[in-house]
Image 1 (cartoon, one colour):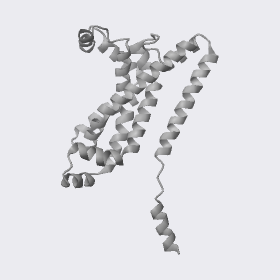
Image 2 (tube, rainbow, N blue to C red; image 1 turned 180 degrees about the vertical axis):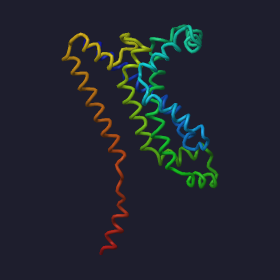
Image 3 (cartoon, rainbow, N blue to C red; image 1 turned 45 degrees about the vertical axis):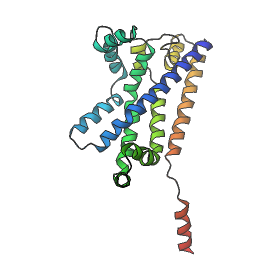
Image 4 (cartoon, rainbow, N blue to C red; image 1 turned 90 degrees about the horizontal axis):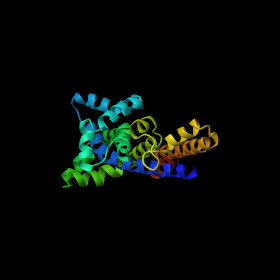
Length: 234
């Protein structure tokens, strides 16, 4: 049982890490687009992105299960390209996790991009910096804390997923069995000692991660300002 739980831990970490990387890749341009968008369609796109925040995970899991089946286009194309079924696979739970955790990455980045403004980017453009150069030399350093927050929230939310994973991945050891499902299995088997161990581990890990995020977002004190204020008082 210990080996099974350790295997579930490895699967969970692999899923969460891969999901977070994909979320940052697709979430960053999406957040930038929404931050700069002025069309009325922005509200609709934001609602679609935020839908997993209010949608029951079993609803999303149910429709993803249908889409991933060989009878429908996404699942059929996947099977034709890879020769394997998409539903009840590791790839399926990663795709489901990306959709379910998308707002946790997009929303912090969108807010950071909106607060950034355009003046610095315009100054960089006047100095000859291209779009990619401006992003890595201006945007990324100024929004680094938001990127860390977005990545941490996306990772933590993925680790805690249950409903979507169970619907589209099932409970296959070494493939789709993650920690949340392992915890559910222990409760079903009345193995409360093992369930408590997993639950308290997830609780402590989540608390530490959230504490780190809040610490990173604490307003930094400016020593030069404090020194000037002291000189004024003197």
